Structure formats: C-alpha cells, structure tokens
Length: 112
Length: 112
Image (cartoon, rainbow over all chains, first blue to last red; front, top):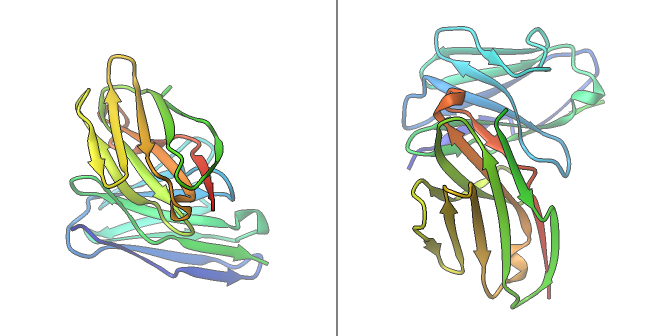
C-alpha cells in the first residue's frame, strides 16, 4: 500500500530558530501533499496544500511567511517553521492521496 | 462553508459495551467520507465510504453512510480497552481541491 514517511518524529528547538520537517511518498508520486497541525485534544486542522512545482495554497489564518512549504519533487514536500515560538509547539502531520489518504507518522515540535 | 461535525465529543464506556459514533457533514461535491483512529501518533485509516447504504465492516468495527441525510455512523461492538482512542471523521469533496475536512473527533475511553 501507499507509504508516506515523515521526518523527524520529534524535535525540540529554541525560540527564534527555524525547523524543517520532511514528508516523502515512498512508493508513489504525489503531485499534491497536505500539511495539518493538531493541538492537544483537538482535531487536525489543514494548514496548506503543497503543490509540486508551484506555490502552496494556504488556509485562511495560516501565515505563509512563517510556514514555508516547498514541493520540489514528486516525492518530497517540506514544511519549514521559521522563527519558531512556543505557541508553534504542536503536532504536524503530512498526508498524500493515492486511492485514499495516507498520513505520515507526524512530527511533535516543541519550542522552548 | 464545508463543515464536518462529530458527536459525541467524548464517551466513556466499559469493556464489552457497544458504541455508536456519529458524523454529519456539509461539503461541496461530496466524494468520500473517511474514518480514522488516532492513538498517540498519526491517524490510522479505518474506512472510506463513497456509496450510501453499503455497510463496511472490519472485525468489530463497521460503518455506513447516508448521503441523503448527510451523515455516517461508526459502530464498535464488544469494545476493548485497546479501542480507546480519538476517532476522526473526515470528508473529501472535489469542490475543495481534494483536501480532507476533519470533524472535531470523538474521544473514546473504554474502561476495564
């Protein structure tokens, strides 16, 4: 079946630094990938749609300059949280769609 | 605006009980409804429902979709403590560029 790999699984960073999260489709090509954020005890909120070879589409209220998305190949999308602050601490999950949605394993980001 | 609403938001039962989780939706150009189970990390796929009235079953879990009344239910029979998790309902509509819209989730706790 379709496999989506996400890295790292968890990361702790200092306030003001940037963090990059990678999402790879391992056995299929994904022209579109989706990035979600989940706060404790809440559901998944879509942040943006990552499009291979073009700009990402951001959901309302998501700062595109803070959450940089790059989808340079058909198997890799990256999300960079720039100038991270403690309020950016969350669980970030990517997904790709092939015959149904497959999620990556998620990244737990803690900003201290 | 596309919307997915789950109920109840939380539920506590004892082992052996049967539970029914609800999901109602409003979405442009409905394509599919998906159920996921989330424990500590990323959601794991349970069911994808596209056609009305056809029950999907996997072990003690089953789900059905009603496209006329715009809702779905997820049933779990003979619950076990391992069923404790957040159950997420999501809807995929072609009118929203293929992204999933998630409900708030139902937190199920099964006590021994």
